[in-house]
Every structure is written in structure tokens, then in C-alpha cells.
Image (cartoon, rainbow over all chains, first blue to last red; front, top):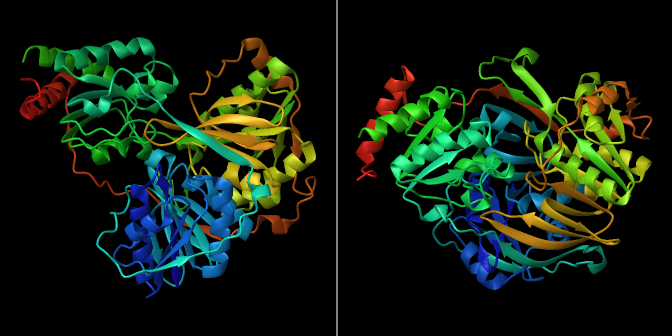
Length: 316
Length: 260
């Protein structure tokens, strides 16, 4: 069988989840002795093709059209590429942009679609694994169809490395401009006074804190540690802390010496943004996925543990 | 202006639960208005409060979800539609393309100016229905919208990308817009609104009402297993009183040397 991976780029650079999707695609192709193709739409496609020629890639399809991602262009180009290549599995990264065109391709070509997949197997048919209920449960799904469209979760596969001997094919997609009904007019950085990515010590607070007033107990912990206060998404959405404090996929990626997660469940969107040397989690739910990534944890009420920890550290 | 808002009743799992075959028993599950949909609803209600018009909330689900759909009426939706029948009940998995086919038929019947959805639902988190719906309708779309300005023929949206970056995009109308959390502050319904919503009629439609035959619901995706994931990490979990566990954590923190 043939696996077709769609690569993603932004502001001139291929994004890491593209190379992770190549690894997932190669594993799948190996399961049946098949070929791995990769497609890239727009930007400097020749330079992208060189970088995408990683070990195990058999063919790179380039579609030269536009500089930045446009979902209407990608939908048309990838749908045409799928009809030409006829892959058994179409793979894309489960990113904001991957999810912005692949469902339309699937709908247009009547391909079964499964998103946010964390594992793939092929044995006389495709079986995928995904999480439910914020990672507390996993489910496997079997897909009984000649072809399928899948998005794979960033961070679930290592990036493909090395250099392959792929051919490069300039694919001549026909883009109907009248069907391009969205126009990207620019980008905007969400900045602020605090750069959590620069901090050596972070105390991050999540939904478990329950109210803005309760932030005081984590502020006290941060103060005694000389740490920067950070947060997961719900705290930002509630307006309890400004957006520059957000850690995770839509916020900043951080790599502190010490990361203390307080009342954070640990969704993939959050933990994908944390690369801490020492990771501590305090949460009252023993099934919270945060304990999968933590080095040290306490399963208990944060309103009791955090003040006790602050007091203990004051005496240090 | 008429805005149709798609609504999901999202389920969450209690701290302690058991898996029975392919299901978790209802006694371990809580249900509520999907968090993302609450923001989508609020955004729609604010538009019609400013400019006039109607907000229609649409959900796919059995009678048991009516408590959730009534929340949308209490929070400002003018009407609510619930789609359900035996064919839908028999489905193993309500995947995004199937949802899009059903919701697309509702849009065809209601002919709104815009459709707002949440970016994803908190339980299955497919995040694909808004785009599949737009594709079904042949409409334009904008996803992960965290800022929105509407003009007569275009929606100016900010799309939230990864890493504190936003994309500024103009989307032709009519469009399906998936709304990100944080775009507004969803209102709390007053007791009076809640009481009125309890009395409101909810229109129930089956697939035949929407002109959909049974073949609209063929899915080749089957759920084959449901299980608690193996814990990947090797976290050291401290047990004891808060003072005892705090002392253990303090030792760990001191050993990192960050408190010099």
C-alpha cells in the first residue's frame, strides 16, 4: 500500500509535526512493504522537498501555489493529489492547520476520517488508537474502507531523520480560484511583559484552582521559590492571568529546571509544551494524565498541599 | 441575522470509574454543555443582541440531552432543535462526517446566515465537524476563531495557531466559524431565564424530517476497544498527610538546587 503524508510549513519553515508524521507513515508503509509519499503545498517547495527527503521517503510531491497555508488551496490540491496517488492512508499532523483542511478533503472524497491519533496499526486493515475524556481513557477504532484520512498527534512519534533517495515530482494541481474563499492577511504575535519560556522555575496553575481569588496560594508558592507564575489554558480563558503566562500548544513551550503543575489535569495540548528537568504535579485525580509526565507527584487536595509546601519551603 | 449554533452535550469521567466492554456506565459520567460551544453560543447571542436576528441552537442526541439544550435557551438562544431517531441511536460511533451530514441537512432547512460551532467537544475531541460541515454545505469556513469582526459579505477572523501566534484571515460569508474558548465571557443564566427555558418547546426532528435516508449514516469506523491507558510515566507518588507529602516535595525541590 502507499501512505501519503502531508507536510506543514509556516513562515518559510517546515514544522516539526511534519517529520513526526513521516515516521508514523513509514511505520505504516513498512507494515505492508509499501511506499511512503509526502506532499507539500505552497512556499519554497523545492527547498521543502530537499528537507522532506528523509530516510524512508520514496517520493515527494510538490504543489507550487502561494507562500503561506490557505485551507481552500490545500483542500483542492490534496484532494487532487489523493486521486492521483491513490494512497491507502492519508496522514497529516493533528495541528491547527492540519485540522483546517483534512476534514474537508475527507468529506469531499468520502474518506473515513479519524483525528488526533496516537497509534496506528495495519494488519489486513487499519486500526487506530486515540484518547477520550482528556486522556483518561483510550479507545481503538477499526476502519473498514479501502482508504482513510488520519491526523496524528504531535509528539507521539519521533521525527524522521537521515537523508533518503526520494524522487521529487512537481504535481500540477488545478486550483479553482473562485473556490478560494478565505484570504490570509497576516500574522500577529501574542506577546507580553513576561516570557515564561525564559524562566528556570515555573509554578503553573490550572483549572483546579477554581477561582481567581485562590491564585494567591500559588503566588505565595511562586514567591518563596523565586519562580514565575504560569498557567494552563482555562486560567487564561477566565482572564485570571494574562495570555503571556500560558504554557502549552497554543501558548509557549517551556524548558525550566523545575516545573510545578498545580491543579492541571495534563491534556496533550498542555504537556506538549513542557520539557522540564524536574516535573512535579499536585492534583487530586489519580487518573489525571499529568502523572504520566511528572517525575514526582502528590494525589491530594491542592488547597491543603500547596500551603503546606509553601510553609515547609519557607523554613528551608 | 440568523445564526445557527451547533451544540454538543459533552461527557466527563468521574475520578473513579469502571469500563464495561465498550462503555463507561452512566453513573461514572457527568454531562454538561460542551465548553467550546458555550463560547460559540455567547458569540452568536451577542451578535443578534447588537444587530437583531435569531439564534437557533441545534444538537444531535436523545431525549436525555434536553437539559443541556435548555441551558442554551436560558443563555440566549431563541429556539432549539434536537435531532434524533432510531437510526442515529443504532450508530456505534457518531463520527464527524456523519455529524456533518446531519447538521448540514438542518442548515439546509433553516437557511441561517452563519453557523457557529465550538472548536471541538471536550469528550471525544475530534475537532473536525465544523470543517466537514462547511464542506458538506459548500460554504467557506474559519476555524479556531478567537476574535471576530463581521461585515456584510466577509468575516474578519483571528485564528489561534500554535505558540502564541494568530493568523488574520478574511472569510467570505456565508461561513461556518469554529469558536475558540476565551473569545468572550459566557454569561450565566438568570433564574428567570432558566425557569422560562424549562417551559420552552424544543423541536425534535428525525432524519426523514430532514430529508436524509438511512444511507446518509453509513460509517466504516467501528470502536473495538475501550480501556484505561497504561501509565507511561514512572512518577514517584508521595502519600500521607498534606504536611508529609509537602515535606517530600520540598526535599525534591531543594535537591534541584533552584533555591540557592
